[in-house]
Length: 108
Image 1 (cartoon, rainbow, N blue to C red):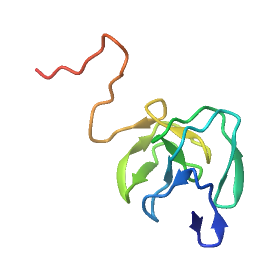
Image 2: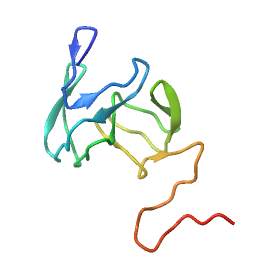
Image 3: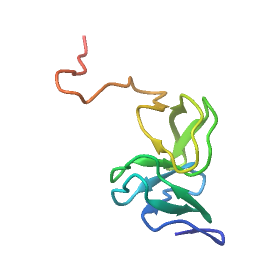
Image 4: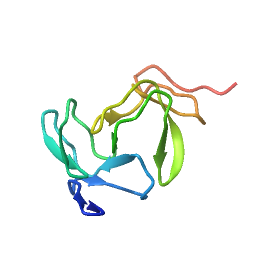
């Protein structure tokens, strides 16, 4: 995939040109190096298939765009190539809940 003339690793998918996140098209192991728009980035954590990766550095409270639409905001600064998930991304629309055993979302 390319953005202009800058190369991005084929294992990272850009869904819309205005997005500031990329989607992992494969499991990316911690320590792997990927290229994002011409910059080589070493991944600090394993990123599972389908998870989001920061396309560029994001400032605290900045909106995350996926398919060109805001899906939430980051809760602190995020570096290019960093995993975006519930540990640093908060939905602006739905309550965040865990997938841990024994925790369920209950509507009253």
